[in-house]
Length: 140
Image 1 (cartoon, rainbow, N blue to C red):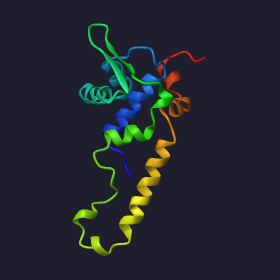
Image 2: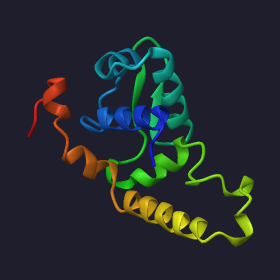
Image 3: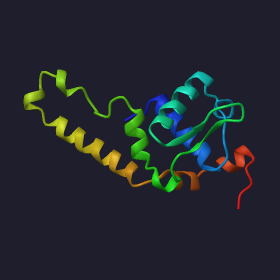
Image 4: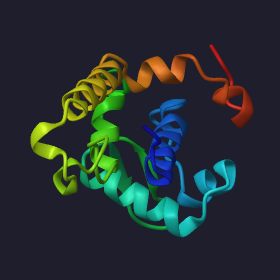
């Protein structure tokens, strides 16, 4: 399965704020750091904020930060939120639908994919990234 750009941006933004969870980050900062248009970054931040993954702060010195601890955000949750369709194939419009052995296999594969993402948190992904170094954030 190939994830959409929207999901990619959501994961990048979440990783970015997971580096320093208490620090407010601006749309401009993540857009510039990850080569995402500000418009796309704003849409993703809005979605993640509405879902509770991010806490947004309005105003001149506003921005956003994690809305929940990184170890309580699974990658599967993020993918389910941001992917418009997690079905591997359009079996509903297939002539073989009633007598196909492939659809059950594809569904099992998708379930395994999502189960693997559910087994990993944002904290797991953040721990394995070099993002703090790339952003100039001091490490412990």
